[in-house]
Length: 168
Image 1 (spheres, rainbow, N blue to C red):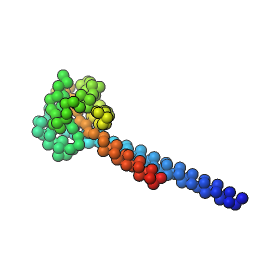
Image 2: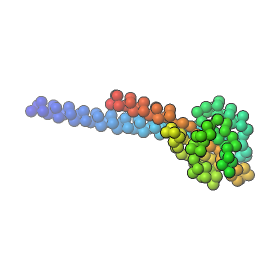
Image 3: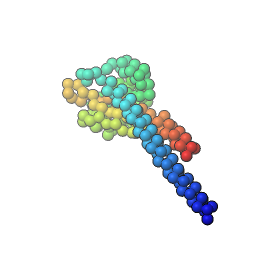
Image 4: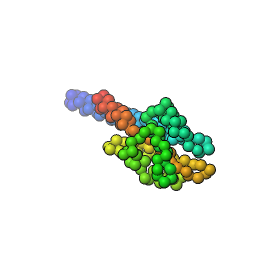
């Protein structure tokens, strides 16, 4: 009788510890996922917003290249005219990937004056992109698009899941 009670008590303690570990692990995973994605979003937005001067005029191509390569090497920047033609490709984004990275919906939203943040897949690789209208004299004169690969983000989340699985 005492042995059966001891087994039930041990099993209930083990279940409680497992539940606590699952809750803490889930909280750690969700917090890290949100924090990493927020940092990526912040970097992409900073680059896009820094790609235009206060008056809305576009920076020179060499300025864009310097900003991107020095301050945010993982972020690409494109400036697109209202007709969809690429005016500046400071990061040297491959033309094949360009259409998929930009996405017609994001381009249309930015041309209508709304900035849009989205995740897109190009050849099974995820990217976080931010498209914002480029204003000149209060009118949309083009779109500035910035983006970053989510490969490192996904690798970090897989690593966290591996660690949590191995320790839990």
